[in-house]
Image (tube, rainbow over all chains, first blue to last red; front, top):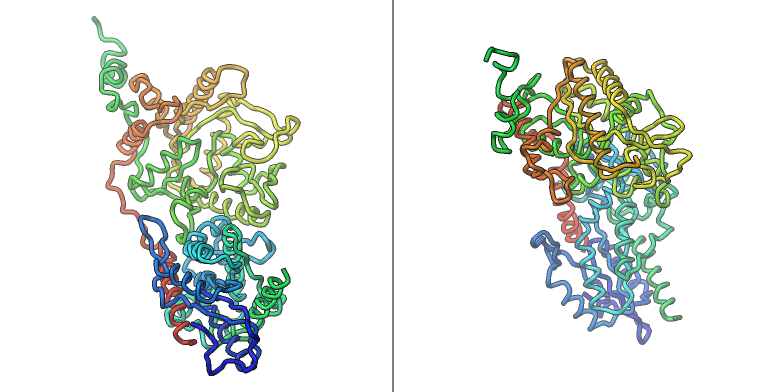
Length: 270
Length: 355
């Protein structure tokens, strides 16, 4: 759970470096790897404690009488960690691949939508238009367990809660021969073709909209996407790609660690 | 007593035998139908609020309810309905007047462009003046509105050109129109969007001649695009919620329904492909003793709707219903389910592989 193994501890660790709890789904990996790089460079500035929820709490939730219910083991475990490490900041990486699974392979009945924030983006001429508000409502339902997770984190700690966005989408899947890293998704892509990159971008923005509003409504803050990783067209710069189509690499993780450094510095000043 | 003109008439011509005598639920004023609807016939619907009942029942009764603007299968049914998918054949919302229907077709075919084209909503949102409640908060942007309307008009054209039967429920004669070009608004500007401006918006109460002329134009137009299409006209039994005439809403209701009923009669006699179905009479007739209206004396009860649709099925259906064709429609839904499963697995597998 604690990333800094005793054998890897820097020789000159400040006497009391702050603790940061990072919990969530697979995007925590890039940050953990970046922290490991810092360890190697003797550049650790805070103690990053990583709690990866899957497969430890599989499934994360379930439906009961039409309502989503969080896995009952998650909140006590978060509380235990918080009491143990007393984090100054909590980072939640709950946005997984909600944008990715809908926009990687073409649907048999293709769809597209207009982003209110970027209404001039082109529409797929082979797709039917669906209302943005309807998309938003539909995918807000799919993100229901995220809300429960944020609420659980708010209950167990007073420390500020920041939500980590998913890395920006990849524009060119062809540049990453490793594929989606999942054979089922790869089969769907082979069967239906790759969805237009712009649709992936729109989905990413859509989920971002849902995620940010959900965070704000529950007293959490959304970390901005590190501007260094964004290409002019809003996609992820290639140098931050990993070996699959969705996750970012440790260099991206380092950008986020720097954001956390800044948050800690602000907190210290205040 | 010598034989006379009424001597050999069937029971349905006599009030006592056909209306006062039978139990209310057994009264059948339809008597006969001009044509039958085959289970494979594509049945399109439009009209005022009561038409929603008809559409819903058609869809549930084994008719081939024709929807040309369907919700994408990824959406939950309740959400899709909130955005007016499947409520009617296309997402035009309630079409209250014959003039509104005529202008809808004109606009869909590019024959008419209203001067008042869009209403400003909250922020960058846009309200469609001609279907102001089609989405809960209007359209999220002007670009979405433009693209959606283009798609909507294509769905209207497809309905016109492919339907076999069109069921249109006449609802109102009163309307608010543009003072500049006469375009009909389904709702008074300001009620569900837009701003009422007495200089730009004026009240109209259509008369029999106008309603019949609008219907005749519409039927001729449909026939020009789709000669095999047949039409069933009905009149909504739902009273006016309010009148803009300075008189009792009851008097205005009687005027409106009378005009619509007469216009429908004229048109059904004039056009061989048009039939009249007496929804209005089934619900409001004395046999029902007001029992087909809910406590608000406006809403039609389920029993009233059932009576209407039972007779509709009996006289216009009558053949074994075709099973609902859902297999093709839901390929995307199945794929979505699979993707969601993949999504869950991707997370897990990815995590296992990157430790």
